Length: 146
Image 1 (tube, rainbow, N blue to C red):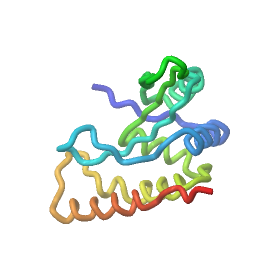
Image 2: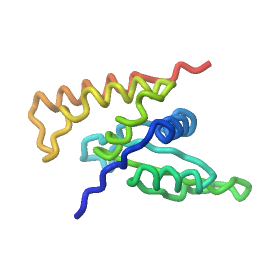
Image 3: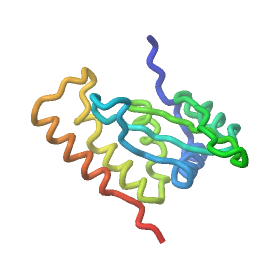
Image 4: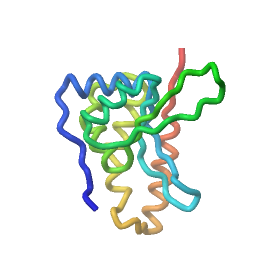
């Protein structure tokens, strides 16, 4: 299996994608199933698939999925998702341009995520405790609202 890495982004591309994430996206730690550790996920939701296609093409990784429409009068919408090390690679480019609380989340992830996430998935007792502390600190960073 070939591991895809994030393409090099110029400042304009990085700033545009950061704006999309600030406005329509999330930076979170998510479980794929109950028994797994939380992994880094960066996502953007939008009703214009062309915008998400641009992001995917520019980044060179991630996937686009259809979101469920719950009512016939809702516009179909889509989500771009990129996870784990690829998401970390994207954050390295866009973090300087983030303006919301997501800037603090990105900073924390860039500082600690690699150290607390061994590639082999094997954690020592201390790493498990540090990772739980990291997740608590991460989720305590929220939007202050208006």
